[in-house]
Image 1: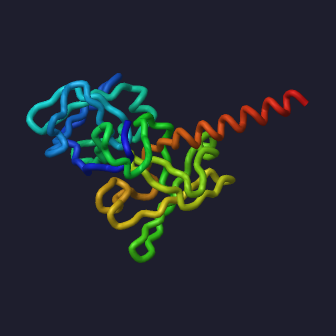
Image 2: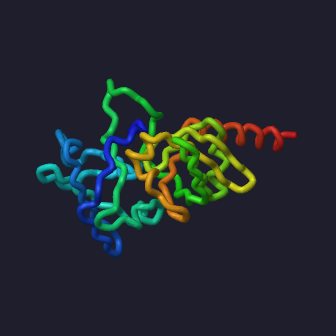
Image 3: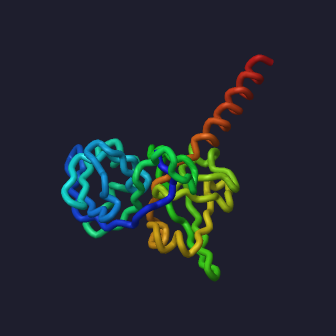
Length: 206
C-alpha cells in the first residue's frame, strides 16, 4: 500500500523492452536505504517488486499485462518517473490510501496556467468516469490528487496543481496528448458499485 505522496522524481537509468517483459533500473539515491529484494515500490503509481539491488540502484521486472495497461510502455532512458516506497505502519498518510494497481490511463486534453495554479484536464475511458467525482480523490502517476472538476458526458475530469506538485512530480512536465496512470479511489468505486447493484435489484424485483 502507498499514500499517494511522491517521494522522488527519478530519472530512468536503463530500461529494456522485450517481447514479454521489460526490465527497469533506477538510481533511487537516499530512497534506496534499507530497500530489500521483494520490496514493493510505486513507479508512476504502479506497484513493482524489487528484483535486484546494487548500492543505490534498484531493478524491477515489468510483465506484459502491466506494460499494456500503464504508461510504463513509453519509458526510455532519461525519462522521469514518480517514486514512492511502500507505506509502513506509523507513517503519516498525507494523501489517501493507494494500492498501486492501475485502473487505466488518462489522456491529457488541456492545460491552463493561471498564476501559481495549473489546471490539467484529462479524458478517460467511459467505464472509469463514473468513479471520478468532484472533490473526490484519484491517483495520477501515483500522486494523490483532489478532483477539481468533472464533465461526465465527455468522460473528462480536471485537477488543479500547486507549484510543489508541479515541481516534484511528472504532472509538472506532461504535455497534451500524453498519458498518466490512473488509479480510482477504492472506497468511491465500492460505493458506486454497491449503489448500482442495489438499484438494479430493486428494478428487477418490481
